[in-house]
Image 1 (cartoon, one colour):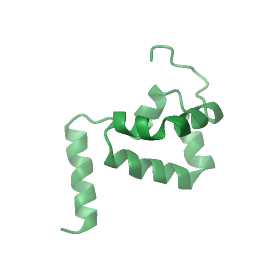
Image 2 (cartoon, helix red, strand yellow):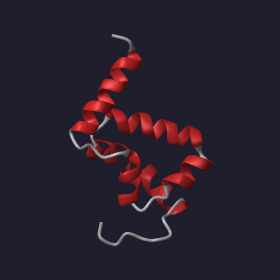
Image 3 (cartoon, helix red, strand yellow):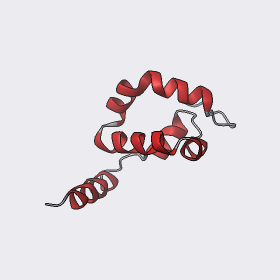
Image 4 (cartoon, one colour):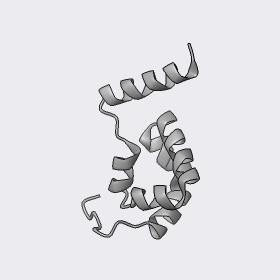
Length: 83
């Protein structure tokens, strides 16, 4: 099976299971993902690839220190205090 088909199948299954998107995940973590994607596109693409492979909890455990640096640099203006 070609790699593209595998990737598409993974995303379709993840969506059907009610999986969270990286964009939604970053909003929950009070990170302005749009600014990050615009300022550091290579990092954004790497994070997207890693997030697609991992459960959100595993992603957070592996990227915890990086996510804290990113949050400080690209914090959402409207802080989500419910998290």
